[in-house]
Image (cartoon, rainbow, N blue to C red; front, side, top):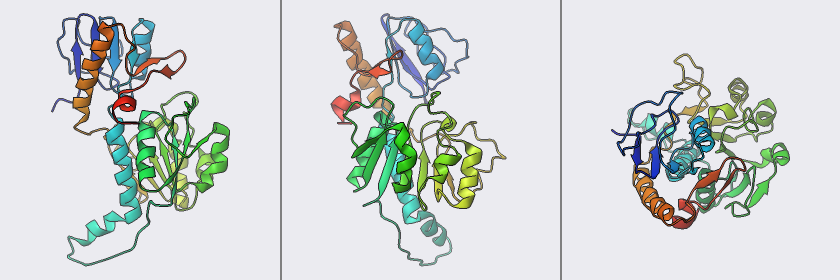
Length: 305
């Protein structure tokens, strides 16, 4: 199965790549090979990166004067992943699954998402999609973002300074922020100690946001009650990692973005941005790294996020 691709024209380049993918040649040939750290920036006047985790390559393109951005096509599957994972934890779906091979009829009651309070850290494209879906279930959603726009689909926005104070309110905490000097190690011993008993931590951001040793110790103490982890500081996760066997951990291999429909959205975005570029119009998803500002996104205009 093709998981990554690049589409090029003489003037424009679309990179549908993970962080370490080979830069495409200027003749329009697609590329699916691993990208070495020394890869050259592709030819062409414009460039769109379609993955969130393009940190090093992102800045290399900026230094080369390229127009760059993130396609946000992963927000939908990641948000759906978060909702299903929290529902499975709240409803104790693993107990139903365990009872079936034994042919045992074991009904049980479960927690509802309705009426719970969620905190989404990083209310960008992914965080907004999570917030919208949590609200649809009747949750009260708090949000935190380094540069709020006023359009975030949450009930309340929190400052960085307010996070520790508000954490005891939160039943679910979702990490959806990029790894930056400001967010690295954000979830540390103090953060975890402030979390509500019975709460769930979900990380679909980067492993660097979490002090993993502190998280393991906190899980042993039962606060948070559980962690749903799609990302880790070291990937692939080493075979001897204690996360594999921890009873309070649900882990997946950095695959929350795996929705099949994202490929079609990439193509739609490329066609639209190529037309915009040819007319000299602002591109969807364009980001200016020096300021962190971005234009409206494909999801803003097409899906209401």
